[in-house]
Length: 343
Length: 295
Image 1 (cartoon, chains in turn cyan, yellow):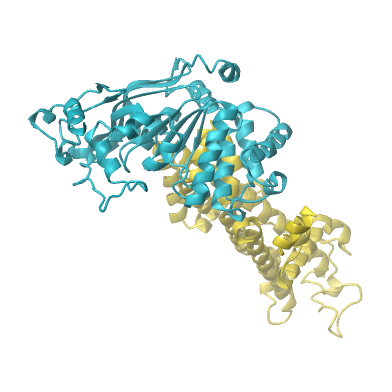
Image 2: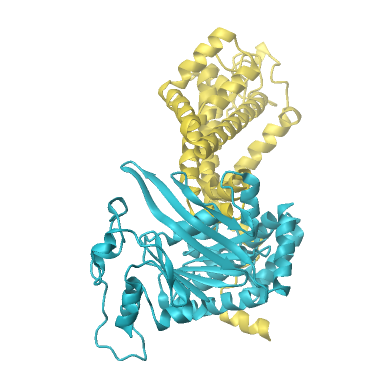
């Protein structure tokens, strides 16, 4: 039932791309992990939405909660992690994490690509078998149909000689081909949302570019929304329509990609950009962000970035809310001042 | 044209699957051949045996096999203390022992694997209970349990078979639990769960094929042990009861004549030895075949 509904809405999404509707809406999400030392909250009050056919880049350094945000969206939080508060609305229906039917609806509507394709492919099954399996689980089609579709999908993700490669085992093909097979699995059955969790981190640079091109092409052809998670700002700049910057479990800046790169408003985003080398700028030294991310169990009560921020003032001991600034939203008490400084 | 360029780019194009499958070392060939022979014997013992295995002939007691000048025509492997044809008894004994060991090993493997998967899947209380049973079973010498059970309930074939199955289930359970616990945190298992696969699909189609290698090795180690357990119990007179016979029972009977008619014990002993060795050799080879990363 759910699957049918999902398919109808997905197919029609291509026709009505002009009047975009919200594909996924994360509202005030807080994730809790129970550790022996007590609970920690690696994701706190995250709100983020994604329209159909849109690409949103979710960036932040390791451990900032971007992967956990994705996992709670798709329902893969482990035993110790749980959604403490907030909700996720997928295709207009709120997700119930405990309902198996709802979980099925989600897994049919979402695909996920993981960081390391080598470990995410089953070593004892052929590529074709695994893509067919993914298609079969999502659509409930027969094995024969699934196998035929698997070859088509391998072709779609740009694997040469898909018929022959379908009979290969993961260790027999290169990392780039493995990632392509992983993408074929993720898009099998046509999910409306693709979560790409650092899909190119384990690949070398030339392959990275190819995979990015592939994702962009697939999005054009299939019209799915992509949540692109990465710690590489340069990478998302190429593909993202909008960007969300996370720091220590919170979204600190949310803005259209162009605006964010042209004029970052949050001090952390600016820090990230100045610590990144650009070819066309002639800078002698990169400016790193001083200090380290506060540990999860010792978060400062106010702005988590305050201890590392050059503009920190007494007001930073109260937590800043996300508020409009320019074309986007930032969570900083000094947003406006930043503008004047930048100008 | 394009096919040619591909062929030249990949000089070591893999041979068709069937062709490569049959490329195995000579020792494994011998082992497999012997196992096939044992399987044929076990299946067709009643057809192959020259005499009834219970037929006694007190005139021809303890006659030696064919190589001796004292051997009797027709009794290729000689006769035992009651003048029964040793070859016929050996064929039936092989059948009984192999059937018992095979069924027993399979029962133990299936039981242990299922319990191991359940423990790994549910965790918490189920895990605690299964592991407690495993520890309990591992701490009790199984021969003692078997003796007690057989002494209390008397001997019958199905009870004996159940006991064979219970012997060694705990090694499968412990092994499976550990393998599954580590496999289900692997990326591929997470990826399949992300697709919304039901647990049985995840375990049967994805995880079990990955962990089957060690289980098969365990099976090949366990199979000889089950034969030996059957042998020990029959040797003690608690296993297969006369007039039915088994390799262990033949060994036990032959023990009394070791100095005068050594073949009565040595021939069944040799069958046990070669069968178990062949099983281990073949199982080890099979493990490398089943693991695509070792090809």
